[in-house]
Length: 114
Ligand code: AMP
Ligand code: ZN
Image 1 (tube, rainbow, N blue to C red):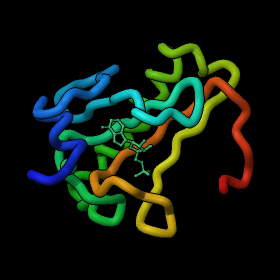
Image 2: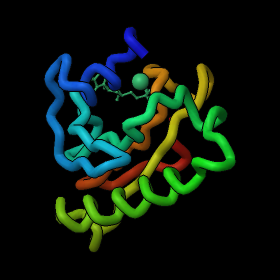
Image 3: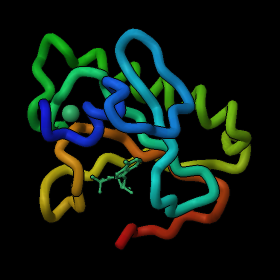
Image 4: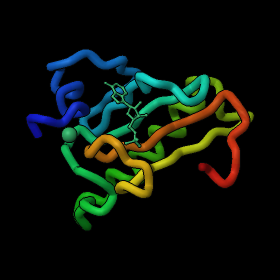
């Protein structure tokens, strides 16, 4: 997607603060962090939101969760706890139309989220 900011970061067209990547996913530090650790984990493939994940590519979701756990350990937030969030659609608070999961940690999280 030529107008997708996350695709541009994945393709190296614009800089991103990358903390992990493999053949299927990338993880970048959020540019406007809401917690001491705030990482975005996303598929390299442009999928607009959770609603567009096809049945045959559902493994990407479990892979993203495994990467989240790995990064939580690496960033030192696994023992105290952390949160993984997907915002989907307008009322869900999604602002970038390329599916991504927020890994947040390093402080107490409120419940319910705002
Ligand atoms: P969401 O609101 O769930 O769609 O999350 C989008 C996230 O992307 C927000 O937390 C933004 O701060 C973050 N973001 C937007 N542009 C960039 C960028 N160029 N690099 C890193 N994070 C970004
Ligand atoms: Zn994209």
